[in-house]
Length: 135
Image (cartoon, rainbow, N blue to C red):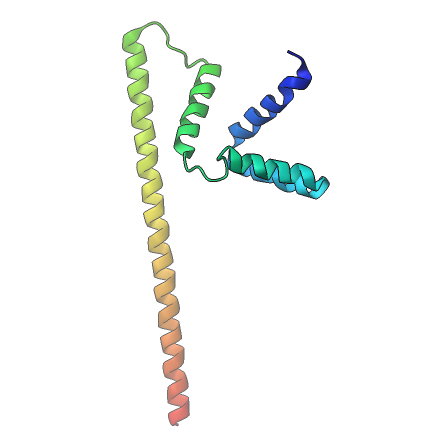
């Protein structure tokens, strides 16, 4: 197969590895430089459901498997070690999810505190304005 025939599939794989933002950037650049290219990319993204699928976890898992395969995370042949490694990686992923959940709760608490402070300042300001009007 010639390199001319394979470059679209290579470009597609390269963009898939980088996710939806890469596809969107490619589409915008296509519109900027030559609008039919941007239109073609938009049509392809909609047709292939790249624009609307929420299956990021599945793509992330495939990307992680490719990454692990490339960087020596292949089965070692020692089943006890492979089981230990798989369990450790699963535990680390669980801890990461728990930490991300914790960070989300922390951000929500901070946002609530800032909002409550804003409401208190606004109420205080309104009360001071009322006192000035009464005087």
